[in-house]
Figure 1 (cartoon, rainbow, N blue to C red):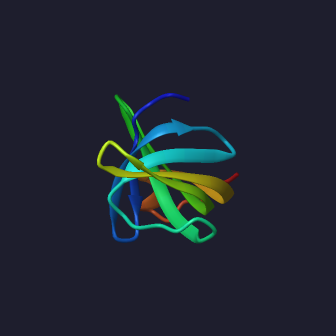
Figure 2 (figure 1 turned 135 degrees about the vertical axis):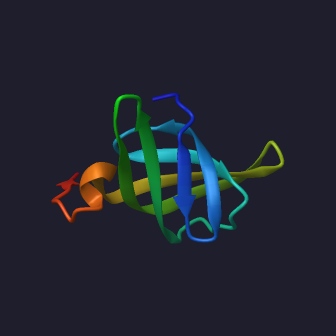
Figure 3 (figure 1 turned 90 degrees about the vertical axis):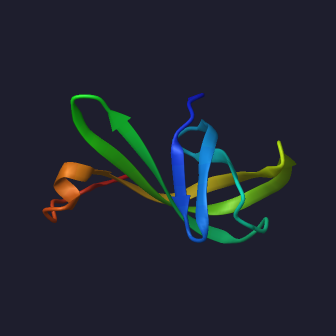
Length: 96
């Protein structure tokens, strides 16, 4: 999907340029190295409903300079989707 969604990862933040069920491409100031594993989260706002957060473990497959920032492409290895309203109460999440 071509949508700008905030990305949170260790050491900083970013914004997606492209995301689907198998991978994500985002821009960030965070240093990453191709071949390394990263943990990151994407939060989807939904007016009138609780936000949904997609927690992912990924493998960095490419890093490039992009608009003065780093463009990071990552293959998703494992993920889960959680409603922010339920996360605070310890509710179960969807493993993808």
